Picture (cartoon, rainbow, N blue to C red):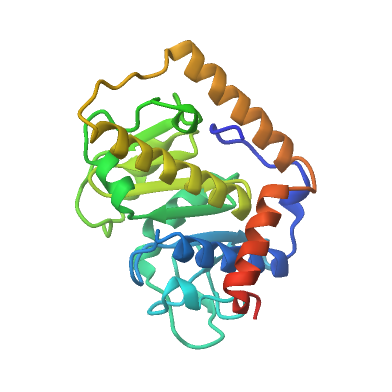
Length: 262
């Protein structure tokens, strides 16, 4: 995948609302299954096709539901401000929690999905000045492709959105310092895969640096080469109608938490 943003041109950009709902509900279940949720907080949002009058529409989780309760049918449709357009079960949304997501979606039309987490490993890496290091093949995927945004308090200030967008720029991975991580995907599938890869990279860094031995980062040229290999593979997937990795993830969710499709 190209970690610098650009418009999707393959079949992923033509997904139906039903497909987007299914994938987003599965994303919530995957994040819960991997222990990457934070109670009822943090969000995964997905862009829907514009409404009949050109209205911008996004899907968000019903506020108060845990991630393993989210289904394709109970996702709430909101506009770019977080105002509710459709709420099948009347739960409402955490509009303040959509602050960051709406800013990214509106500034970056290639961001079909925005996934924000507060994991122990992600928060730990976001809390050190060095951020994520290219220590191994996993983290090399993100070499030169992570933006950083300094902590300003709980992200409720609408003015902060402009600074977040400026810091993110054309990249698809943002380390929110002292806070957590945010990734953008050209599809829900891409955002989930990116988030999972980022999480294991952070876990590996925490593990490696806790050993008391000498870290051995990859040379810049090797890390950059590896990042390019990842990028080309993800680009190819997004331009096709086949994603074996996402299909395998969906099968895993089908087995463990099949109610997400409802």
